[in-house]
Image 1 (cartoon, rainbow, N blue to C red):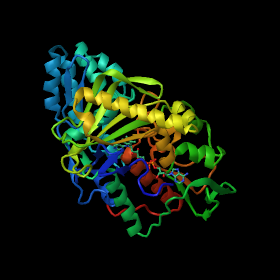
Image 2: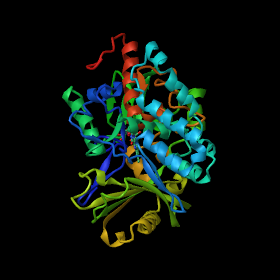
Image 3: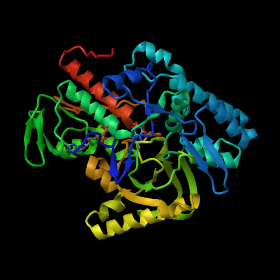
Image 4: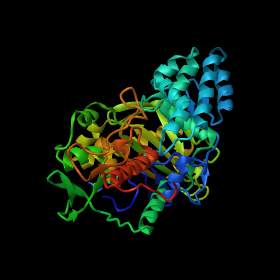
Length: 457
Ligand SMILES: Cc1cc2nc3c(=O)[nH]c(=O)nc-3n(C[C@H](O)[C@H](O)[C@H](O)COP(=O)(O)OP(=O)(O)OC[C@H]3O[C@@H](n4cnc5c(N)ncnc54)[C@H](O)[C@@H]3O)c2cc1C
């Protein structure tokens, strides 16, 4: 649909600055890992530099000025947590030991019986930490640590396991940030696909999936072009695929239930700033409570999540910095603004200004040094990626669905049709997109009675 590859895994340039939307960390970056082989097959990790600074996950400052750093090293994290709350020693030790256990587990791509047996201890940890972060935080006796833990690990009120895994994989070195950011990852996959004979049509928006006698036979584009196909795989937005392009004719209670009952990664407003100042000695990612709340989409935000991209020298010219602030928001508010350009732009301007005011509480001199301000809204996400209600990662992982839940990748009664991507992979992410695509090919091979084989078995 867009003019370049990547979907949500994207970035854009404003003057000399690159504003990266997606990649905080990629999992499976150590060569012995099963996931690494998958990235290699996709051409994504070869010759790429990954970094994992020790405080990369997050730092939090509460409104009393207490600073909590989620260190990658679980031993260092344990000592840091104990410094807030010796009375929580037992729980802190358990939690940081479990982080270590997670970190040493290798996520498997093709899971056989032997893998399942080997992974039982990890599967038990998945169960143990499927509780919401708020419930996990409530277990700490010390009120300061309780609040800091909640603020650091909470990610849209998902199961604790979701954030814990990120911290664990960064701690063990099996997750890291790729220098260059999102676009080089997407371009690398594009190149690999072209090299093996794939063809890509950019600027081509699907409007309908063609079906004859319950067989998918191709697609129709918004300009009326018809493309015939033996097999159709939709790696695009799940809701559009099922309910618009197939008019909801191939569903059942289970699939309808997902779209009626599951929770979505919320839409975001992202403010990106190009700043003529070197912030490389400042935290990479910090959540702090601003004195004056930021008003976004009719709601007030009292915590600001500020990312400092100076760990990647390709994002800004030397001595300059890209800062981004990410806030969840209400889709309906923005949807109503879509036909009112004036109000839409005024709202974006207000948000930009109040975010800058909030950051000035941390970095007082920043105002005069800002060279570029860019505000992306849920409508931006929809315009470029078509994702339902602007969701940025598909389904949230909580008590309704877990990271290990399998979602169907075919639709009832429809043949020669498959789905891949974040809408069939709870928790989304690049790992979910890639593994679900691989699984779609496996199902195709089975249906076509062909052996599934890869260059990296
Ligand atoms: C702020 C942010 C931070 C993130 N951080 C991370 C991270 O650190 N690590 C990580 O692994 N993941 C991260 N993600 C998530 C990750 O980017 C997504 O989960 C992943 O890119 C989803 O890939 P996908 O292919 O399933 O879907 P998408 O990226 O949404 O791709 C769908 C594709 O379908 C195309 N399309 C849609 N509609 C049509 C149509 N009508 N016609 C033709 N084409 C169409 C779109 O153009 C797009 O190319 C982050 C995302 C965001 C926004």
